[in-house]
Image (cartoon, rainbow, N blue to C red; front, side, top):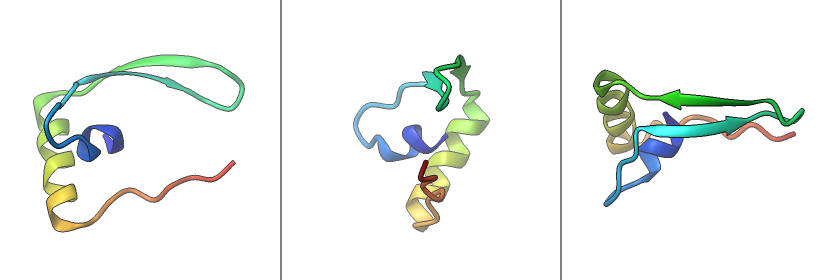
Length: 52
């Protein structure tokens, strides 16, 4: 949901997420996920960044 919340003009709902071992997974946000991401962004409650 973090990438979605960072988008202001373009709001994709499908993401290809890859971990440190190059294992990829296609993620599709529901409308509820997208609404939650927008609300968190507006409140300034962004998700923490995970450093490798």
